[in-house]
Image 1 (cartoon, helix red, strand yellow):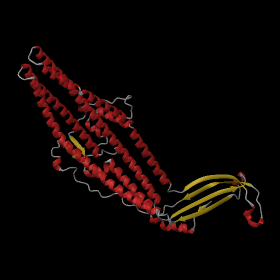
Image 2: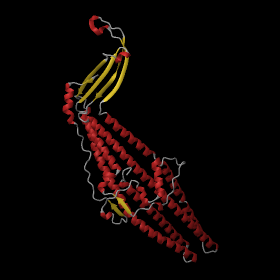
Image 3: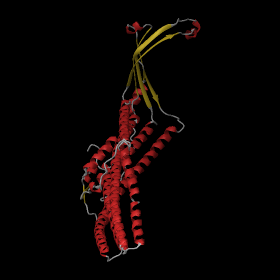
Image 4: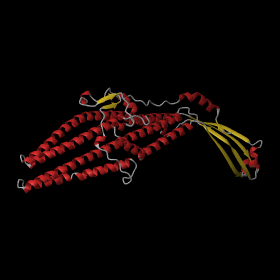
Length: 474
């Protein structure tokens, strides 16, 4: 049995165990505002924001759309980035287990066989010679490095923080993915709505062209009027192709998000009516945002890892004690390994104190401290970004409500004006130009209303994503 330990090592282990290095704090002070935005910025917010309400993890269900829920489930189940994030989390958790195992004594069972021949110089001037012989050894061995100054414990803490970081990165990836899927679905719904509106415009253009051609046949309209109506029809028809390309691009993007080839899967096409913005918006209080938003939690975990790295680098400046033990059976034949007199052992201890390393260890400590300061600044910036995103989403929603209401009224008036203009043209009381102007105004108002409703739903989704949702599995 071999243990390399002496009295000095035992005394060092007994007297220095309580001197573990304590890393810097991993919770820097971050002021938390009492509100996300100034009251005057939210005065026109039509929705009643419910503070101190936990946003559900499946935040997209707030839109109340079954097809949207099914689409998100498909995307989450097949997305390759999420699978990669899950694998990274599993690897990080395995690293934590490996690090904890390194804190314990390491025991191994070994065996060795060989043939040995010593030279005559082994016994000096006696010229005594030992003939060649076979030898066999077998038995357990153990080594242990007591964690006197917390280097290994801080390393485990660093690994645990990295595992927490990967967990929150997975949550952030899930939130980002669902937010992107909803955003692309909304863009497709907006494009489909615009395409339907443009098709109605083209139908009205054809109707107008028919009216002008009929008037031209009886001599009440000029050839210029016919050409003008044809030009308007062609111009509006040309607006369909870009919208078709936009729908196709969004469809392909959703396929890729779902981990499918565009040729293998076609996502459902949702209309804007599938996105019903709730009248009450659940929103957690500002202080809760620090505990729920994944990117903030990931930045905090990264800060903890940086703090633990400072502890590791500091502990490397202090002595290291190594204990080892071997218990062997030694014999000249395999059968004799289990006979009397074959037992052997050794015990040893080693103590190493860094004296000169060319400045490497102190530089590594300074590097770790600088990395900690960088992680602390990044954590604070992440918090600021989070509050800024929530504030922007809230104020955008406040303006969206007013814009959507105004556009709805504008479209109602413009549509009635266009109908009256067509009726008046048929009676001959107004010219074609006024009819076309009224129809274009109605078409523009309808498209503006579609875009306002899409923007309102998009900003609601941005608010839900900015609020951070809940942790996975909640």
